[in-house]
Image 1: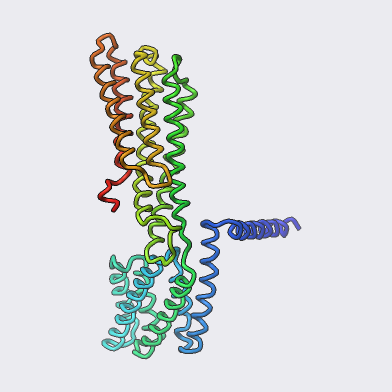
Image 2 (image 1 turned 90 degrees about the horizontal axis):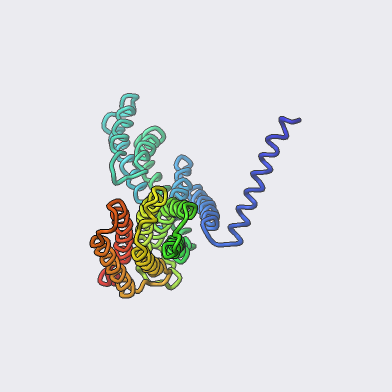
Length: 385
């Protein structure tokens, strides 16, 4: 009885999870809804392709129609067209190879082996991508089931074409949803988290007692979280950029260059997190070694103001709306001017010990890298037109 209850519990849990998945996809838009809609379109397209092939073509090629329909229903319309073209190319090459060998040397075990060898070699062509193996699959069917006959190859091509037509038609009738605003907001959230760390750091630097080791460790964990999430956000933005290609749906009325700008900003967020982590490592070392208490009060006050400028620049870059390039440039120039003044003051102050001067230089270097990173996160005006 216990043996039977284990599988029953697992099946019940799987059923509950499936129901929850369907409920989430119905309640709110997103990846789960897109996936559910794509699965439904795949079922309908495969069923239509099989029905048409069953009615119009011989049974020996009927299976290729629903298979191609499933292949055509990729996550994006661009990918669907690309994979269909690749599959059609693989089909033509495999069928031509089978027909040529059957007509030239006949149907033999050794000729089948030669077909397999040539098909595998041809399937490695870069332009066929992931469909390269289909050269051999189609070649085997055309060689063994169709004996290389032209009429079989014609029916095979018709079945594949029916499947591709059904799959692409389903994609066009209900094109994949656009999520430009969500991807944009995901990039903005990364900058919001970085900006909060920089703002807190600036406020702590301006205080007489400075930041604590616990604060620095918390900020470092925050940077680690941004660095861990940034690749996923970047991948989602890249996926949406692909989704926009050939997609007849409009992108929520947004301007056409929003995704390229989000891609640039997302990449800069990852690098900014790395610069900020480097800054925090220097700060942590200064607290542990006691050098922080020897840093001139005037430098710390000016450095806090510099970090506030960095935080304002992050706010400009990370805003969901279009970044004001002139305002960002003004913030960066202001920050670089503060950076230069602080660097000059530290170099001229002979009372500052050498280790402390090195620490100040490291802190300024990372702040300068952050400013340059933020400036490069937004394309020049000429590039956005």
